[in-house]
Amino acid sequence: MTNLKTHFELRYTPILDFNNVYKPIVSPFLKLGQFSIESAGSFEERIGLIFKNEKYQLDIRWDRMIFIAEGPRQDLKKTQGPLFMFFDILSKIRDSPSFGTINNCLLSEINLKEVKGDNFNEIKENFKNKYLSSTATFNLPGFEEDVAVTLQFADQTGKTFKLSYGPFYPEKNYADMKLVPITNTPPPGYKELNGLLLDCLYFETTSDVNMEVFKRMNNFISSNTERISL
Image (cartoon, rainbow, N blue to C red; front, side, top):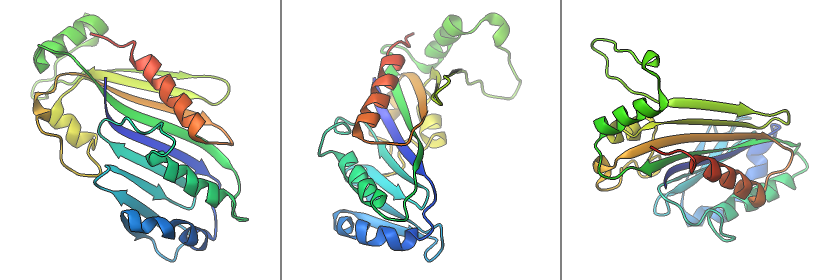
């Protein structure tokens, strides 16, 4: 399994004076990478911290924080990894008198399970034979066929898990799913990759978010995507 993109997001009640709150908190981190500010001077002012060499970015807003990383990652669960900065900034924002409550969080991962020795058309046919009945497929003249299975689960506590998986179409998927949001450059040899693309989203209603929550959500996604095969 190869991770192609990670999106971790937490949402909190809006901070009306956010444009004043975040500046002294985020300023010490600006020397570490690039940054951009949007909607300056408004309630919805936001700042993005971009680390192109490390292939990740932080988007800090008045009602949420977002972490996005591209490519395979081995460091997201490490104590001093990229998410350390994310949670350090969150901790300082939460200390502000203007901060209300955390409402929920979500973890989205796009992974590739490689299938060696097959081409796209063979994988697509094998996928249809395994996961779709003959009555579930049909042709539309003039349209290119793309197939996938989408499953969604929810419980009574506000947790939702959604999983979509189907044959990986490198050129189409890299563009349509914005798999390289930081560098805008697919890795060498990406057109030769074969396998199944797994698009996973785990949403949870919660009043507290920390590294342990991220690890638990990540482990949940991993344990369930490993069950998919062809």
